[in-house]
Image (cartoon, rainbow, N blue to C red; front, side, top):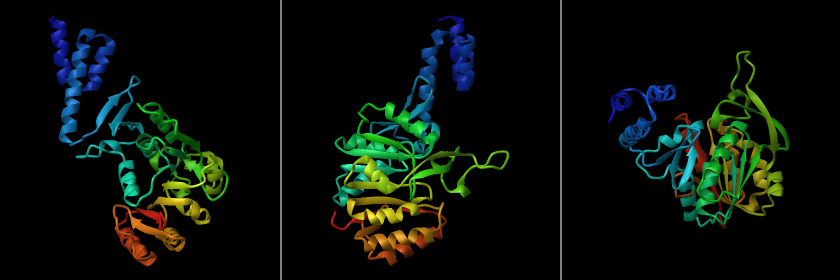
Length: 316
């Protein structure tokens, strides 16, 4: 082993990765050290993951993008660090818990609407583990949509069952303005949109689509599972959900902190009256009635957080 190679290996061990990469690009560290540098950094990364009790895998693509791998699904981590926070369990995909609950209540997810698909995590889970299902993924943010598309291309299984629609769910068709630069928190609610140096909102105009139009456009007669997480705009869909309730088997709806509790309470009362049982996410016992669900949510809101509720058609 030559002196330059020995020196290169020493530098790889003592310098941060960015400094090593710069030395590689400049030629100060030769190609004979590259395999050692990769193994050494992989070893360090493995130690970090072990200390953090992360059970997921990591893949680095040719362009340098980092994908977190769990349940055989690769998720681009460029837009979020959430996938790297799931400790001590092999699955980091939220779809696992959703699918488990659907199985518990006897709902087979043949047709899935993922409203507020974000980076495609949930859509991909159902496409992989329910390959006969059809998934309609609706995402408003063009930034999030780009990551979603990269996730669709990065899988070792077919994603052809996922229909992606670039639109914002709303109470009417048309155009809406959505915030930019907040990743999963991009919202059509003006108070949650970034502002630029001129104090004007940083936004983009996107197509808006109603639930009625989505049913018609997708050609789906009955939706077995509908996930709604649209950053505070969920109340805009309530009238349409009630109108179409006979064609929906199960829903998971975010009652988020971006809107008031008062805006979400009608979901509990109107959907109970429409024949749905209501469950707090994580519970397998339905509330006795809408009043009990309301009291639960108000108590949760007092802690300063939102939550998700399941709505299961009683005949399901």
